[in-house]
Amino acid sequence: MISEKENYKMLLRGEIPEFVPKYRMMDWMVMPSLFMDLTSPDGNKMNEFGVQYATTPASMGAHMAAPGKEILKDIRKWRDVIKTPDLSNVDWEALAKKDLEKKDIKNDPVVIFAGGYFMTLMDFMSFTEGLCAMHEEPEEVYALFDYLSEYYLERQRAMMKYYHPDVYCLVDDTAAARFPFISEKMYRELVMPFHKKHADMALNDGLLISMHCCGKCESFADAWLEMGVSAWEPAQVSNDLAGMKKKYGRKLAIMGGWDNTGRISFPEASDEELREELYKCIDTLAPDGGYAFMAFVNGDPEDENVKRKNAIIEDIYQNYAKCYYQNN
Image (cartoon, rainbow, N blue to C red; front, side, top):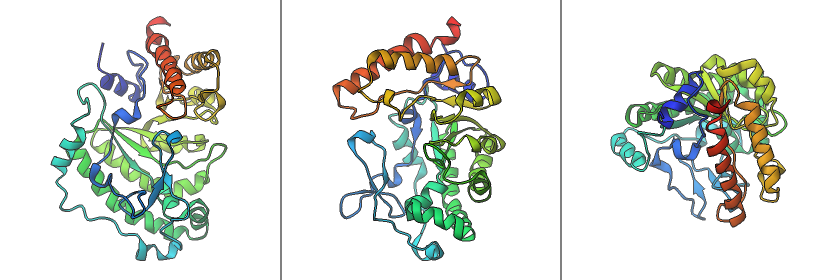
């Protein structure tokens, strides 16, 4: 059997892989540890711009910008507030060695993440003020994104040189559960130009490109494909996944497609319901390729019931989903 890395790359090239991949974002993702340990004076996790984040055990490690601690109040004043770090003295070779030392880079793909322009603005300002800024001061938003892109692209160029990634994942949650936060027109005018800078750089280096975007974001899929994106996660069920599979086929692999916000993804659902929905998800999305399995039960990962439910999911992956192409 080929490695998970080569099997996953087959999926992103639009081929039918030897086995259904299990998309393991946290295992494959590599982030530069340069700013990972920053904390605010009151103990919150903090990024290099000074944005503070909050989390809970139930969020399984996910963070959101801490409410009431926004750093940018007026988009017209961003030049006075937002300062990108100086990366000129970073020892990227040593950093890459440290960040990759616990990764199984022989078997697993190395995936680096980039983008985040929309979400960065929301982190700076809050969703209310950030969305107002995009509508009321689009020129200032574009100028801020252009400034940020110089920093982000410098960082990503160094990562591409020293981390030797296989996949470049664009990340931006431009949609809520039931509808996009912004129109396709606004996405194309304000956000896509900067996503495309990253995509062009990655494609020129021979990398495959995936997209992380939560929520009902199917209206952006054509734009993604135009940039060279070939896979999307978590592909939440608020989207017409069956319709998208029919429209795009293996050109846009669906990684996930699991109802990760509905009742079935919480420990209260019965084991029988969980199994039924897993089989349904696999049988809908796996035929003819273009699918990577990704499912989990929400909750505290130390909770025994959560552990047991996730063990059921793993069993169905190993004994049904993974070998789907051999058995069908």
